[in-house]
Length: 276
Image (cartoon, rainbow, N blue to C red):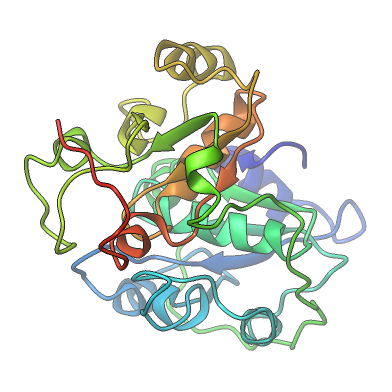
């Protein structure tokens, strides 16, 4: 597999190949969405055969606090969760969700950040799998523990004190939240001064798959994001920003993640806030 995405048809072919043809991927079902329904309930009703459920709140984030609503998990905790899900260092991983790739992008980013070099997001997620005629399984598979050891730092991050020095700062939230017109989740509305807005929804086509590399380059260039200078991305809590990081990788631009994002930024009332 090459690139950060795999199509449903490519995954079907990969899973149907003889074991000697290629290393079969570890499949992680990370279905989750803000406000529900519980992803584990969806998983129990049907999932890609062999997929293991991974809960975003429990495995892909630390408890909320000064670092925001979804701080990065401690490497030891993340590594233990991935080993429990069967992740191995020498075996590719495919992650999917049913939330426009937002939770899957978080899992992709965390695995890459912690040193796993071969991770793909199922383009179009569960919906694409079903549309491609992929089989569904309700049985929870028996998992052989993996051997993945998490070693953080393989992808760039910026912290709050570094954010003001970033040349191009991208806010991945919906436009109305970026402007501060509404704020349904966090106690303060607005955005970090100087940020430009490229909502995660604009990364996708109508069918829920990612736009082409050329389309994404044009989309981000229109917002002034070219990669000629350093780029960092944030969102509400650091989860959905990974979707923009993935889209930028497809476009050939390396972007850092601000893990605390807006929910972490506003924990210090001395930090500036912009609206409009």
